[in-house]
Amino acid sequence: MESGVKGVQLFRVTQPIRCAPAVYEPSVVAIVSGAKEAVLDGKRHVYGSDQYMCCSLSMPVEAGTPEASPDNPLLGVYIALDSRVMTQLAIELENVAGVARPARAGPLPQGVALAAWDEAFADSLLRLLQICNHPTDTTILGEGRLRELYYAVLKGEAGDSARRAFGVGNEIARAIDYLSSRLEEPVSIEAMVSRLGMSRAVFHRKFKQATTMSPIQFVKSMRLNRAAMKMVAGTSVSEAALSVGYESSSQFSREFKRLYGKSPRQWSQSNR
Figure 1: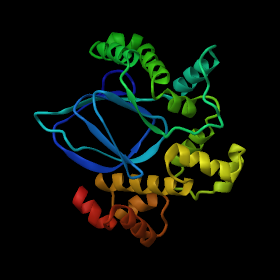
Figure 2 (figure 1 turned 180 degrees about the vertical axis):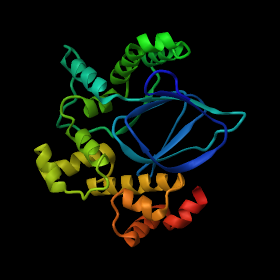
Figure 3 (figure 1 turned 45 degrees about the horizontal axis):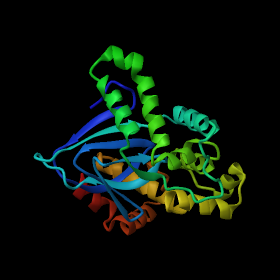
């Protein structure tokens, strides 16, 4: 359900949905009631009303709502992160005296972080939702209230991950954005490291710290997840494979079965 504020949606789930391939774009998901599950590179993350999820990078995941029911519905808010506004706020925050900038030589947080609902986040989310039933208020105040919530995220427990993605020194975030928007094209790691001005070894290390995957694994997971999402929506196996850069249907079927345990056709029929 659209809230009236651009990028902010409300959702309600009343039946269990098992984890299925998905692609998380930069966003915040706040659960008001119930619990949501995300699986990233085999690691299971479950969060409810005591934590919110901040995804600061485009990430291939499996997501579901295994505990939702009519008596215990999942109620939540999805907030897309505007990269322009987040970058502006992150840089301003880093330039303010007393706000420590994450050490560039230190470990990079993963692209998906769970953070406790602190007072600033809860207050800014409430203020944002309070204007959603009033078209005039959403038009005039929406961007400002959204900016408040972004600021609360940057200062909260997920702030380190978000500032790494949107602040100074966000080379890996830019690389992920570049790769995610060109899944149908051949991947050249050499061209990527040259573009970023870092060595191949450093690029691999930082990329894996941020995503838990190597660049090649990341691209493969993104391609297969996007293809799976297209097939669930009714796209044929061959069209889904071509749309994400697979020229060989046999290679696509082989890699898909290795990841999901079924051939694309079998998986599509059982999940559609």
